Length: 140
Ligand code: 5GP
Image (cartoon, rainbow, N blue to C red; front, side):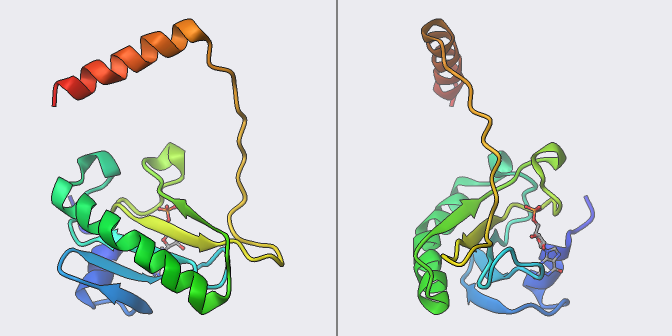
């Protein structure tokens, strides 16, 4: 697969406003922010979607996400924020390289707008679906 713009940013071929880097993770400001401080946290491993990411890279991201969120909120004077992670074109993923958005939600407005057309979970459906997912997980 051809490399994505994020791989080129991580390598330094394309400039970015970097906020954090370690052996497995790179974080930088989004070029089209939904609010000031909108940050992308990206594994250096070029997996396309979260389900394809190695446990090592996932652990590295999980370890640092809270710290990056605290730093973004402190630097922007924001209390509330969303963490967004899109997988697949239909789910609004534009760049096919796993990334987590940290998006401040300023009191003054802006940030992520969310449509949340919630349904209702029937007991029978819940039992069946939870069983199906658990069975998949049991496979390893
Ligand atoms: P997605 O829709 O894939 O979850 O989000 C991709 C994000 O990457 C978008 O918010 C977009 O603004 C950001 N982005 C795309 N290209 C670049 C770039 O070249 N530099 C930076 N800093 N952000 C980018």
